[in-house]
Length: 283
Length: 308
Image 1 (tube, helix red, strand yellow):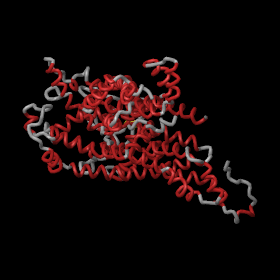
Image 2 (cartoon, rainbow over the protein chains, first blue to last red; image 1 turned 120 degrees about the vertical axis):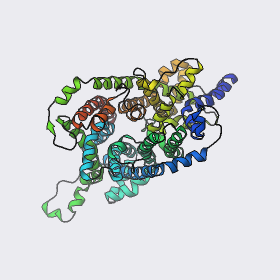
Image 3 (cartoon, each protein chain N blue to C red; image 1 turned 180 degrees about the horizontal axis):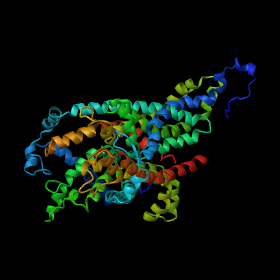
Image 4 (tube, one colour; image 1 turned 180 degrees about the vertical axis):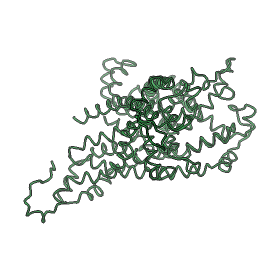
Protein backbone atom coordinates (compact mmCIF):
# COMPACT_ATOMS: atom_id res chain seq x y z
CA UNK A 1 0.00 0.00 0.00
CA UNK A 2 1.17 3.48 -0.80
CA UNK A 3 1.54 5.82 0.99
CA UNK A 4 2.88 3.81 3.92
CA UNK A 5 -0.05 2.90 6.20
CA UNK A 6 -0.52 5.46 8.90
CA UNK A 7 -0.58 2.72 11.57
CA UNK A 8 3.17 2.34 11.08
CA UNK A 9 3.82 6.03 11.61
CA UNK A 10 4.75 7.64 14.90
CA UNK A 11 1.88 8.35 17.34
CA UNK A 12 2.24 12.07 16.72
CA UNK A 13 1.79 11.71 12.97
CA UNK A 14 -1.12 9.35 13.52
CA UNK A 15 -2.95 11.78 15.76
CA UNK A 16 -2.13 14.62 13.42
CA UNK A 17 -3.68 12.71 10.54
CA UNK A 18 -6.80 11.86 12.53
CA UNK A 19 -7.23 15.51 13.47
CA UNK A 20 -6.47 16.90 10.04
CA UNK A 21 -8.81 14.57 8.18
CA UNK A 22 -12.11 16.05 9.37
CA UNK A 23 -10.75 19.58 8.96
CA UNK A 24 -9.78 18.84 5.38
CA UNK A 25 -13.22 17.42 4.72
CA UNK A 26 -14.85 20.46 6.24
CA UNK A 27 -12.89 22.81 4.00
CA UNK A 28 -13.55 20.63 0.95
CA UNK A 29 -17.30 20.61 1.55
CA UNK A 30 -17.48 24.18 2.77
CA UNK A 31 -19.53 25.32 -0.23
CA UNK A 32 -22.15 22.68 0.50
CA UNK A 33 -22.22 23.34 4.21
CA UNK A 34 -22.62 27.02 3.53
CA UNK A 35 -25.66 26.57 1.32
CA UNK A 36 -27.14 24.11 3.75
CA UNK A 37 -26.76 26.61 6.59
CA UNK A 38 -28.26 29.30 4.39
CA UNK A 39 -31.18 27.10 3.45
CA UNK A 40 -32.29 26.89 7.10
CA UNK A 41 -31.93 30.58 7.92
CA UNK A 42 -34.70 33.14 8.19
CA UNK A 43 -34.69 35.83 5.50
CA UNK A 44 -33.95 38.43 8.18
CA UNK A 45 -30.48 36.95 8.75
CA UNK A 46 -29.52 37.46 5.15
CA UNK A 47 -30.85 40.99 5.08
CA UNK A 48 -28.69 42.02 8.02
CA UNK A 49 -25.66 40.29 6.54
CA UNK A 50 -25.54 37.28 8.85
CA UNK A 51 -24.70 34.83 6.08
CA UNK A 52 -21.91 32.78 7.57
CA UNK A 53 -22.59 33.12 11.27
CA UNK A 54 -24.92 31.01 13.40
CA UNK A 55 -28.56 31.30 12.22
CA UNK A 56 -30.70 33.44 14.53
CA UNK A 57 -33.41 30.79 14.25
CA UNK A 58 -33.84 27.53 12.40
CA UNK A 59 -36.37 27.55 9.60
CA UNK A 60 -35.67 24.30 7.87
CA UNK A 61 -39.28 23.29 7.40
CA UNK A 62 -40.52 26.78 6.62
CA UNK A 63 -37.94 27.40 3.91
CA UNK A 64 -38.26 24.05 2.22
CA UNK A 65 -42.05 24.26 2.31
CA UNK A 66 -41.85 27.74 0.85
CA UNK A 67 -39.88 26.42 -2.12
CA UNK A 68 -42.70 24.03 -2.91
CA UNK A 69 -45.58 26.38 -2.27
CA UNK A 70 -44.10 29.47 -3.93
CA UNK A 71 -42.66 27.85 -7.02
CA UNK A 72 -43.09 25.01 -9.45
CA UNK A 73 -40.31 23.02 -7.81
CA UNK A 74 -42.49 19.96 -7.46
CA UNK A 75 -43.35 20.01 -11.16
CA UNK A 76 -39.68 20.41 -12.04
CA UNK A 77 -38.66 17.52 -9.83
CA UNK A 78 -41.34 15.30 -11.29
CA UNK A 79 -40.27 16.30 -14.82
CA UNK A 80 -36.73 15.29 -13.96
CA UNK A 81 -37.98 11.87 -12.90
CA UNK A 82 -40.02 11.54 -16.09
CA UNK A 83 -36.95 12.38 -18.17
CA UNK A 84 -34.34 10.46 -16.22
CA UNK A 85 -35.93 7.09 -15.57
CA UNK A 86 -37.06 6.25 -19.13
CA UNK A 87 -33.72 7.45 -20.48
CA UNK A 88 -31.80 5.15 -18.18
CA UNK A 89 -33.99 2.17 -19.06
CA UNK A 90 -33.81 2.82 -22.78
CA UNK A 91 -30.07 3.53 -22.94
CA UNK A 92 -29.12 0.57 -20.78
CA UNK A 93 -31.48 -1.75 -22.66
CA UNK A 94 -30.20 -0.74 -26.07
CA UNK A 95 -26.61 -1.03 -24.97
CA UNK A 96 -27.14 -4.53 -23.59
CA UNK A 97 -28.29 -5.58 -27.04
CA UNK A 98 -25.60 -3.63 -28.85
CA UNK A 99 -22.83 -4.59 -26.47
CA UNK A 100 -23.73 -8.24 -26.89
CA UNK A 101 -23.52 -7.94 -30.67
CA UNK A 102 -20.14 -6.23 -30.51
CA UNK A 103 -18.60 -8.53 -27.93
CA UNK A 104 -19.86 -12.01 -28.75
CA UNK A 105 -19.86 -12.21 -32.54
CA UNK A 106 -16.81 -12.14 -34.72
CA UNK A 107 -17.76 -10.04 -37.71
CA UNK A 108 -15.56 -7.57 -39.45
CA UNK A 109 -17.68 -4.57 -38.52
CA UNK A 110 -17.51 -5.25 -34.80
CA UNK A 111 -14.46 -3.10 -34.06
CA UNK A 112 -15.24 -0.20 -36.44
CA UNK A 113 -18.80 0.06 -35.12
CA UNK A 114 -17.56 -0.08 -31.57
CA UNK A 115 -15.27 2.84 -32.35
CA UNK A 116 -18.17 4.79 -33.82
CA UNK A 117 -20.01 4.48 -30.52
CA UNK A 118 -16.93 5.51 -28.56
CA UNK A 119 -16.17 8.50 -30.79
CA UNK A 120 -19.77 9.71 -30.81
CA UNK A 121 -19.77 9.65 -27.06
CA UNK A 122 -17.04 12.31 -26.92
CA UNK A 123 -18.27 14.88 -29.43
CA UNK A 124 -19.16 18.35 -28.16
CA UNK A 125 -22.89 18.83 -27.72
CA UNK A 126 -22.86 21.95 -29.85
CA UNK A 127 -22.07 20.05 -33.03
CA UNK A 128 -25.36 18.21 -32.55
CA UNK A 129 -27.44 21.11 -31.34
CA UNK A 130 -28.79 22.72 -34.51
CA UNK A 131 -29.72 19.51 -36.39
CA UNK A 132 -31.18 17.81 -33.31
CA UNK A 133 -33.29 20.83 -32.49
CA UNK A 134 -34.37 21.16 -36.10
CA UNK A 135 -35.26 17.45 -36.28
CA UNK A 136 -37.26 17.74 -33.07
CA UNK A 137 -39.17 20.74 -34.38
CA UNK A 138 -39.92 18.96 -37.68
CA UNK A 139 -41.22 15.82 -35.97
CA UNK A 140 -43.18 17.55 -33.24
CA UNK A 141 -40.81 16.25 -30.57
CA UNK A 142 -39.63 19.74 -29.69
CA UNK A 143 -40.79 20.85 -26.24
CA UNK A 144 -41.87 17.34 -25.24
CA UNK A 145 -40.45 15.01 -22.63
CA UNK A 146 -40.42 12.22 -25.20
CA UNK A 147 -38.17 14.27 -27.46
CA UNK A 148 -35.70 14.91 -24.68
CA UNK A 149 -35.74 11.27 -23.59
CA UNK A 150 -35.11 10.03 -27.13
CA UNK A 151 -32.12 12.30 -27.57
CA UNK A 152 -30.62 11.53 -24.17
CA UNK A 153 -31.09 7.81 -24.66
CA UNK A 154 -29.49 7.96 -28.10
CA UNK A 155 -26.50 9.91 -26.86
CA UNK A 156 -25.97 7.82 -23.73
CA UNK A 157 -26.17 4.65 -25.82
CA UNK A 158 -22.64 5.51 -26.98
CA UNK A 159 -21.16 5.45 -23.50
CA UNK A 160 -23.29 2.51 -22.37
CA UNK A 161 -22.37 0.41 -25.36
CA UNK A 162 -18.69 1.11 -24.76
CA UNK A 163 -19.05 0.00 -21.17
CA UNK A 164 -21.29 -3.00 -21.83
CA UNK A 165 -19.19 -4.34 -24.67
CA UNK A 166 -16.04 -4.26 -22.55
CA UNK A 167 -17.83 -5.89 -19.67
CA UNK A 168 -19.28 -8.65 -21.83
CA UNK A 169 -15.92 -9.31 -23.42
CA UNK A 170 -14.63 -10.40 -20.05
CA UNK A 171 -17.31 -13.11 -19.83
CA UNK A 172 -16.21 -16.68 -20.56
CA UNK A 173 -16.84 -17.09 -24.28
CA UNK A 174 -17.07 -20.88 -23.95
CA UNK A 175 -20.38 -20.42 -22.18
CA UNK A 176 -21.96 -18.82 -25.24
CA UNK A 177 -20.22 -21.23 -27.56
CA UNK A 178 -21.50 -24.31 -25.76
CA UNK A 179 -25.04 -22.93 -25.63
CA UNK A 180 -24.87 -22.47 -29.40
CA UNK A 181 -23.73 -26.05 -29.89
CA UNK A 182 -26.66 -27.14 -27.76
CA UNK A 183 -28.84 -25.40 -30.32
CA UNK A 184 -30.09 -22.60 -28.06
CA UNK A 185 -31.37 -19.70 -30.14
CA UNK A 186 -29.28 -16.52 -30.29
CA UNK A 187 -31.82 -14.45 -28.44
CA UNK A 188 -32.25 -17.06 -25.73
CA UNK A 189 -28.49 -17.15 -25.20
CA UNK A 190 -28.54 -13.40 -24.76
CA UNK A 191 -31.54 -13.47 -22.45
CA UNK A 192 -30.82 -16.51 -20.28
CA UNK A 193 -27.04 -16.79 -20.36
CA UNK A 194 -25.58 -13.32 -20.87
CA UNK A 195 -28.02 -10.95 -19.19
CA UNK A 196 -27.89 -12.60 -15.75
CA UNK A 197 -24.11 -12.33 -15.86
CA UNK A 198 -24.02 -8.62 -16.62
CA UNK A 199 -26.30 -7.51 -13.80
CA UNK A 200 -23.50 -5.57 -12.07
CA UNK A 201 -22.85 -3.66 -15.28
CA UNK A 202 -26.55 -2.89 -15.65
CA UNK A 203 -26.63 -1.54 -12.11
CA UNK A 204 -23.50 0.55 -12.65
CA UNK A 205 -24.79 2.06 -15.87
CA UNK A 206 -28.24 2.76 -14.49
CA UNK A 207 -26.98 4.84 -11.57
CA UNK A 208 -24.48 6.62 -13.75
CA UNK A 209 -26.97 7.51 -16.47
CA UNK A 210 -29.46 8.56 -13.84
CA UNK A 211 -26.92 11.03 -12.47
CA UNK A 212 -25.76 12.31 -15.85
CA UNK A 213 -29.28 12.94 -17.08
CA UNK A 214 -30.57 14.33 -13.81
CA UNK A 215 -27.78 16.89 -13.92
CA UNK A 216 -28.24 17.80 -17.58
CA UNK A 217 -28.88 21.44 -18.19
CA UNK A 218 -27.83 22.11 -21.76
CA UNK A 219 -30.28 19.86 -23.59
CA UNK A 220 -33.16 20.89 -21.41
CA UNK A 221 -32.63 24.50 -22.50
CA UNK A 222 -32.23 23.51 -26.15
CA UNK A 223 -35.14 21.10 -26.51
CA UNK A 224 -37.65 22.45 -24.00
CA UNK A 225 -39.32 25.77 -24.57
CA UNK A 226 -41.93 26.46 -21.93
CA UNK A 227 -41.76 26.47 -18.19
CA UNK A 228 -43.95 23.44 -17.55
CA UNK A 229 -41.66 20.71 -18.81
CA UNK A 230 -38.35 21.94 -17.43
CA UNK A 231 -36.32 19.52 -15.32
CA UNK A 232 -35.12 20.64 -11.90
CA UNK A 233 -31.68 21.84 -13.07
CA UNK A 234 -33.15 24.34 -15.48
CA UNK A 235 -35.94 24.94 -12.98
CA UNK A 236 -33.51 25.97 -10.26
CA UNK A 237 -32.06 28.49 -12.63
CA UNK A 238 -35.42 30.07 -13.23
CA UNK A 239 -36.17 29.93 -9.50
CA UNK A 240 -32.98 31.87 -9.03
CA UNK A 241 -34.55 34.65 -11.05
CA UNK A 242 -37.84 34.37 -9.22
CA UNK A 243 -36.39 34.38 -5.69
CA UNK A 244 -34.10 37.35 -6.26
CA UNK A 245 -31.91 37.84 -3.20
CA UNK A 246 -33.95 35.33 -1.20
CA UNK A 247 -30.85 33.25 -0.83
CA UNK A 248 -32.37 30.95 1.76
CA UNK A 249 -34.92 29.76 -0.82
CA UNK A 250 -32.44 29.52 -3.68
CA UNK A 251 -30.20 27.43 -1.44
CA UNK A 252 -33.02 25.15 -0.38
CA UNK A 253 -34.07 24.64 -4.01
CA UNK A 254 -30.47 23.94 -5.04
CA UNK A 255 -30.11 21.30 -2.36
CA UNK A 256 -33.37 19.70 -3.42
CA UNK A 257 -32.06 19.53 -6.98
CA UNK A 258 -28.79 18.00 -5.82
CA UNK A 259 -30.36 15.46 -3.51
CA UNK A 260 -31.53 12.59 -5.78
CA UNK A 261 -28.13 11.90 -7.39
CA UNK A 262 -26.51 12.12 -3.96
CA UNK A 263 -28.92 9.57 -2.53
CA UNK A 264 -28.42 7.39 -5.59
CA UNK A 265 -24.67 7.60 -5.16
CA UNK A 266 -24.80 6.61 -1.52
CA UNK A 267 -27.19 3.76 -2.13
CA UNK A 268 -25.24 2.30 -5.03
CA UNK A 269 -21.74 3.52 -4.32
CA UNK A 270 -19.85 0.46 -5.41
CA UNK A 271 -21.65 0.27 -8.75
CA UNK A 272 -21.34 3.97 -9.29
CA UNK A 273 -17.57 3.96 -8.93
CA UNK A 274 -17.19 0.83 -11.06
CA UNK A 275 -19.02 2.70 -13.79
CA UNK A 276 -17.02 5.89 -13.55
CA UNK A 277 -13.63 4.29 -13.62
CA UNK A 278 -14.55 2.59 -16.90
CA UNK A 279 -12.62 -0.44 -15.77
CA UNK A 280 -9.54 1.71 -15.08
CA UNK A 281 -8.87 -0.65 -12.24
CA UNK A 282 -8.57 -3.64 -14.52
CA UNK A 283 -6.01 -2.10 -16.91
CA UNK B 1 -14.42 -19.67 -34.94
CA UNK B 2 -18.08 -19.49 -35.83
CA UNK B 3 -18.10 -18.72 -39.52
CA UNK B 4 -21.48 -19.07 -41.21
CA UNK B 5 -21.94 -21.98 -43.55
CA UNK B 6 -21.92 -20.51 -47.02
CA UNK B 7 -21.77 -23.56 -49.25
CA UNK B 8 -25.24 -24.98 -49.64
CA UNK B 9 -26.72 -26.80 -52.58
CA UNK B 10 -29.99 -25.30 -53.87
CA UNK B 11 -31.88 -28.41 -52.83
CA UNK B 12 -30.94 -27.94 -49.21
CA UNK B 13 -32.68 -24.57 -48.95
CA UNK B 14 -35.69 -26.14 -47.36
CA UNK B 15 -34.15 -28.25 -44.67
CA UNK B 16 -31.69 -26.20 -42.55
CA UNK B 17 -33.72 -23.07 -43.30
CA UNK B 18 -32.39 -19.75 -44.47
CA UNK B 19 -32.42 -18.22 -40.97
CA UNK B 20 -30.67 -21.20 -39.40
CA UNK B 21 -27.82 -21.00 -41.87
CA UNK B 22 -27.33 -17.28 -41.63
CA UNK B 23 -28.25 -16.59 -38.09
CA UNK B 24 -24.70 -16.24 -36.86
CA UNK B 25 -24.09 -13.62 -39.52
CA UNK B 26 -27.39 -11.83 -39.06
CA UNK B 27 -27.95 -12.00 -35.34
CA UNK B 28 -25.39 -9.30 -34.41
CA UNK B 29 -27.06 -6.88 -36.82
CA UNK B 30 -30.46 -7.53 -35.29
CA UNK B 31 -29.08 -6.95 -31.82
CA UNK B 32 -27.35 -3.79 -32.97
CA UNK B 33 -30.16 -2.35 -35.02
CA UNK B 34 -32.20 -0.41 -32.42
CA UNK B 35 -29.23 1.20 -30.70
CA UNK B 36 -27.33 1.89 -33.87
CA UNK B 37 -30.38 3.40 -35.59
CA UNK B 38 -31.08 5.79 -32.72
CA UNK B 39 -27.41 6.66 -32.34
CA UNK B 40 -27.04 7.35 -36.06
CA UNK B 41 -30.16 9.49 -36.14
CA UNK B 42 -29.30 11.63 -33.11
CA UNK B 43 -25.50 11.63 -32.96
CA UNK B 44 -23.71 10.54 -36.12
CA UNK B 45 -25.87 12.17 -38.77
CA UNK B 46 -26.15 15.54 -36.94
CA UNK B 47 -22.35 15.89 -36.96
CA UNK B 48 -22.36 15.92 -40.75
CA UNK B 49 -25.52 17.99 -40.94
CA UNK B 50 -23.93 20.63 -38.71
CA UNK B 51 -20.85 20.82 -40.90
CA UNK B 52 -23.13 21.16 -43.94
CA UNK B 53 -25.25 23.87 -42.27
CA UNK B 54 -22.08 25.80 -41.46
CA UNK B 55 -21.83 26.66 -45.18
CA UNK B 56 -25.20 28.42 -45.13
CA UNK B 57 -26.83 31.49 -43.77
CA UNK B 58 -29.90 30.24 -41.91
CA UNK B 59 -32.23 31.54 -39.24
CA UNK B 60 -33.59 28.07 -38.46
CA UNK B 61 -36.94 28.61 -40.12
CA UNK B 62 -36.75 30.11 -43.60
CA UNK B 63 -34.71 29.22 -46.64
CA UNK B 64 -31.02 28.45 -46.28
CA UNK B 65 -28.72 30.66 -48.32
CA UNK B 66 -25.46 29.16 -49.49
CA UNK B 67 -22.50 31.28 -48.38
CA UNK B 68 -19.71 28.78 -48.89
CA UNK B 69 -16.88 29.51 -46.50
CA UNK B 70 -18.45 32.86 -45.65
CA UNK B 71 -19.13 31.96 -42.02
CA UNK B 72 -15.57 30.83 -41.50
CA UNK B 73 -14.22 33.99 -43.09
CA UNK B 74 -16.39 35.99 -40.71
CA UNK B 75 -15.04 33.97 -37.78
CA UNK B 76 -11.50 35.02 -38.63
CA UNK B 77 -12.42 38.63 -37.93
CA UNK B 78 -14.64 37.98 -34.94
CA UNK B 79 -13.22 39.40 -31.74
CA UNK B 80 -15.64 37.36 -29.62
CA UNK B 81 -14.58 34.16 -31.33
CA UNK B 82 -10.94 34.79 -30.43
CA UNK B 83 -11.85 35.61 -26.85
CA UNK B 84 -13.77 32.35 -26.62
CA UNK B 85 -10.95 30.38 -28.20
CA UNK B 86 -8.43 31.94 -25.84
CA UNK B 87 -10.64 31.10 -22.86
CA UNK B 88 -11.01 27.53 -24.08
CA UNK B 89 -7.23 27.23 -24.03
CA UNK B 90 -7.07 28.68 -20.51
CA UNK B 91 -9.73 26.18 -19.49
CA UNK B 92 -7.80 23.30 -21.03
CA UNK B 93 -4.56 24.24 -19.31
CA UNK B 94 -5.92 25.06 -15.86
CA UNK B 95 -8.44 22.23 -15.82
CA UNK B 96 -5.51 19.85 -16.06
CA UNK B 97 -4.67 20.82 -12.48
CA UNK B 98 -7.53 18.51 -11.56
CA UNK B 99 -5.33 15.51 -12.40
CA UNK B 100 -2.43 16.15 -9.96
CA UNK B 101 -4.79 17.59 -7.34
CA UNK B 102 -6.98 14.52 -7.60
CA UNK B 103 -3.92 12.33 -7.19
CA UNK B 104 -2.82 14.35 -4.15
CA UNK B 105 -6.17 13.92 -2.41
CA UNK B 106 -6.27 10.25 -3.34
CA UNK B 107 -2.83 9.73 -1.76
CA UNK B 108 -3.98 11.60 1.31
CA UNK B 109 -7.08 9.44 1.64
CA UNK B 110 -5.49 6.10 0.79
CA UNK B 111 -5.39 4.92 4.40
CA UNK B 112 -7.37 2.46 6.42
CA UNK B 113 -8.34 4.41 9.51
CA UNK B 114 -11.88 3.81 10.81
CA UNK B 115 -14.55 5.63 8.83
CA UNK B 116 -12.32 6.03 5.78
CA UNK B 117 -14.97 4.72 3.41
CA UNK B 118 -17.32 7.48 4.45
CA UNK B 119 -14.59 10.09 4.11
CA UNK B 120 -13.84 8.93 0.60
CA UNK B 121 -17.47 9.16 -0.47
CA UNK B 122 -17.90 12.56 1.12
CA UNK B 123 -14.84 13.82 -0.73
CA UNK B 124 -16.41 12.56 -3.92
CA UNK B 125 -19.63 14.47 -3.29
CA UNK B 126 -19.00 17.54 -5.49
CA UNK B 127 -18.91 15.40 -8.62
CA UNK B 128 -22.41 14.05 -8.08
CA UNK B 129 -23.94 17.49 -7.80
CA UNK B 130 -25.29 19.25 -10.85
CA UNK B 131 -23.03 21.93 -12.32
CA UNK B 132 -26.00 24.28 -12.19
CA UNK B 133 -25.96 23.98 -8.41
CA UNK B 134 -22.16 24.29 -8.29
CA UNK B 135 -22.46 27.42 -10.40
CA UNK B 136 -25.09 28.94 -8.12
CA UNK B 137 -23.05 28.19 -5.00
CA UNK B 138 -19.93 29.80 -6.38
CA UNK B 139 -21.78 32.80 -7.80
CA UNK B 140 -22.93 33.44 -4.31
CA UNK B 141 -19.47 32.81 -2.84
CA UNK B 142 -17.91 35.34 -5.18
CA UNK B 143 -20.44 38.00 -4.34
CA UNK B 144 -18.33 40.81 -2.82
CA UNK B 145 -21.13 42.00 -0.54
CA UNK B 146 -22.19 38.84 1.22
CA UNK B 147 -20.15 36.00 -0.27
CA UNK B 148 -17.28 34.22 1.40
CA UNK B 149 -14.82 36.13 -0.77
CA UNK B 150 -16.14 39.33 0.78
CA UNK B 151 -15.77 37.91 4.27
CA UNK B 152 -12.17 36.78 3.70
CA UNK B 153 -11.03 39.99 2.05
CA UNK B 154 -12.62 42.15 4.69
CA UNK B 155 -10.98 40.04 7.37
CA UNK B 156 -7.66 41.18 5.98
CA UNK B 157 -8.96 44.72 5.66
CA UNK B 158 -9.00 44.72 1.87
CA UNK B 159 -11.76 45.68 -0.53
CA UNK B 160 -13.12 42.46 -2.00
CA UNK B 161 -12.90 42.14 -5.78
CA UNK B 162 -16.05 41.52 -7.79
CA UNK B 163 -14.59 38.41 -9.39
CA UNK B 164 -17.44 37.67 -11.76
CA UNK B 165 -17.70 41.29 -12.93
CA UNK B 166 -13.98 41.66 -13.60
CA UNK B 167 -12.95 40.90 -17.17
CA UNK B 168 -9.51 39.71 -16.11
CA UNK B 169 -10.60 37.48 -13.24
CA UNK B 170 -13.91 36.07 -14.37
CA UNK B 171 -12.65 33.06 -16.36
CA UNK B 172 -10.33 32.02 -13.54
CA UNK B 173 -13.18 32.29 -11.08
CA UNK B 174 -15.37 30.00 -13.16
CA UNK B 175 -12.56 27.50 -13.73
CA UNK B 176 -11.93 27.37 -10.00
CA UNK B 177 -15.58 26.43 -9.48
CA UNK B 178 -15.29 23.82 -12.22
CA UNK B 179 -12.19 22.29 -10.66
CA UNK B 180 -14.07 21.41 -7.51
CA UNK B 181 -16.13 18.56 -9.05
CA UNK B 182 -13.40 17.63 -11.53
CA UNK B 183 -10.80 17.10 -8.80
CA UNK B 184 -13.29 14.83 -7.06
CA UNK B 185 -13.66 12.78 -10.24
CA UNK B 186 -9.90 12.41 -10.73
CA UNK B 187 -9.54 11.53 -7.05
CA UNK B 188 -11.93 8.61 -7.35
CA UNK B 189 -10.12 7.35 -10.46
CA UNK B 190 -6.82 7.42 -8.58
CA UNK B 191 -8.25 5.84 -5.45
CA UNK B 192 -9.37 2.88 -7.53
CA UNK B 193 -6.00 2.85 -9.25
CA UNK B 194 -4.09 2.90 -5.97
CA UNK B 195 -6.10 -0.10 -4.83
CA UNK B 196 -4.62 -2.08 -7.65
CA UNK B 197 -0.99 -1.07 -7.29
CA UNK B 198 0.97 -4.25 -6.79
CA UNK B 199 2.17 -4.57 -3.17
CA UNK B 200 5.13 -6.67 -4.30
CA UNK B 201 6.57 -3.84 -6.32
CA UNK B 202 6.15 -1.43 -3.41
CA UNK B 203 7.98 -3.87 -1.16
CA UNK B 204 10.72 -4.33 -3.76
CA UNK B 205 10.99 -0.55 -4.00
CA UNK B 206 11.25 -0.23 -0.23
CA UNK B 207 14.06 -2.80 -0.22
CA UNK B 208 15.84 -0.66 -2.80
CA UNK B 209 15.46 2.27 -0.46
CA UNK B 210 12.96 4.07 -2.63
CA UNK B 211 10.68 6.16 -0.47
CA UNK B 212 8.53 9.27 -0.59
CA UNK B 213 8.72 11.16 -3.87
CA UNK B 214 11.06 8.67 -5.47
CA UNK B 215 8.70 5.81 -4.74
CA UNK B 216 5.78 7.85 -6.03
CA UNK B 217 7.50 8.89 -9.22
CA UNK B 218 9.28 5.68 -10.21
CA UNK B 219 7.01 2.98 -8.85
CA UNK B 220 3.52 4.27 -8.15
CA UNK B 221 2.78 6.68 -10.98
CA UNK B 222 3.85 4.26 -13.73
CA UNK B 223 1.39 1.73 -12.33
CA UNK B 224 -1.34 4.34 -12.25
CA UNK B 225 -1.11 4.90 -16.00
CA UNK B 226 -4.59 3.55 -16.84
CA UNK B 227 -6.12 5.87 -14.21
CA UNK B 228 -4.08 8.82 -15.45
CA UNK B 229 -5.14 8.16 -19.02
CA UNK B 230 -8.83 8.22 -18.16
CA UNK B 231 -8.38 11.21 -15.85
CA UNK B 232 -6.73 13.21 -18.64
CA UNK B 233 -9.36 12.21 -21.18
CA UNK B 234 -12.35 13.10 -19.00
CA UNK B 235 -10.68 16.35 -17.93
CA UNK B 236 -9.99 17.46 -21.50
CA UNK B 237 -13.53 16.60 -22.53
CA UNK B 238 -14.86 18.38 -19.45
CA UNK B 239 -12.83 21.49 -20.21
CA UNK B 240 -13.99 21.68 -23.80
CA UNK B 241 -17.59 20.94 -22.86
CA UNK B 242 -17.72 23.66 -20.19
CA UNK B 243 -21.10 25.27 -20.68
CA UNK B 244 -23.31 24.99 -17.61
CA UNK B 245 -21.06 26.96 -15.28
CA UNK B 246 -20.67 29.80 -17.75
CA UNK B 247 -24.39 29.89 -18.50
CA UNK B 248 -25.22 30.02 -14.80
CA UNK B 249 -22.45 32.23 -13.47
CA UNK B 250 -21.96 34.93 -16.10
CA UNK B 251 -23.75 34.17 -19.35
CA UNK B 252 -20.40 34.76 -21.04
CA UNK B 253 -20.06 38.26 -19.60
CA UNK B 254 -18.94 40.79 -18.71
CA UNK B 255 -18.77 41.86 -22.38
CA UNK B 256 -18.13 38.35 -23.58
CA UNK B 257 -14.93 38.08 -21.56
CA UNK B 258 -15.76 34.71 -19.99
CA UNK B 259 -17.15 33.15 -23.15
CA UNK B 260 -15.98 29.80 -24.45
CA UNK B 261 -16.74 28.27 -27.83
CA UNK B 262 -19.48 26.01 -26.45
CA UNK B 263 -21.37 28.92 -24.94
CA UNK B 264 -20.65 31.35 -27.75
CA UNK B 265 -22.08 28.85 -30.21
CA UNK B 266 -25.26 28.50 -28.18
CA UNK B 267 -25.57 32.24 -27.84
CA UNK B 268 -25.14 32.80 -31.56
CA UNK B 269 -27.55 30.11 -32.65
CA UNK B 270 -30.27 30.39 -30.05
CA UNK B 271 -30.31 33.59 -28.09
CA UNK B 272 -29.64 37.27 -28.04
CA UNK B 273 -27.87 37.56 -31.38
CA UNK B 274 -30.87 36.17 -33.19
CA UNK B 275 -30.96 32.76 -34.70
CA UNK B 276 -27.77 32.49 -36.70
CA UNK B 277 -27.75 28.72 -37.12
CA UNK B 278 -25.17 28.72 -39.92
CA UNK B 279 -22.68 30.86 -38.05
CA UNK B 280 -23.30 28.89 -34.86
CA UNK B 281 -22.65 25.66 -36.73
CA UNK B 282 -19.36 27.05 -37.99
CA UNK B 283 -18.30 27.73 -34.38
CA UNK B 284 -19.45 24.23 -33.41
CA UNK B 285 -17.43 22.77 -36.27
CA UNK B 286 -14.28 24.49 -35.01
CA UNK B 287 -14.93 23.14 -31.51
CA UNK B 288 -15.55 19.70 -32.97
CA UNK B 289 -12.27 19.78 -34.88
CA UNK B 290 -10.39 20.65 -31.67
CA UNK B 291 -12.13 17.80 -29.89
CA UNK B 292 -11.40 15.48 -32.80
CA UNK B 293 -7.69 15.68 -32.00
CA UNK B 294 -8.36 14.17 -28.59
CA UNK B 295 -10.96 11.72 -29.84
CA UNK B 296 -8.51 10.41 -32.43
CA UNK B 297 -5.82 10.03 -29.83
CA UNK B 298 -8.22 8.15 -27.54
CA UNK B 299 -9.37 5.86 -30.35
CA UNK B 300 -5.78 5.23 -31.38
CA UNK B 301 -4.91 4.20 -27.83
CA UNK B 302 -7.95 1.95 -27.67
CA UNK B 303 -7.01 0.42 -31.00
CA UNK B 304 -3.55 -0.42 -29.65
CA UNK B 305 -5.20 -2.14 -26.69
CA UNK B 306 -7.61 -4.02 -28.95
CA UNK B 307 -4.76 -5.44 -30.99
CA UNK B 308 -3.24 -7.09 -27.94
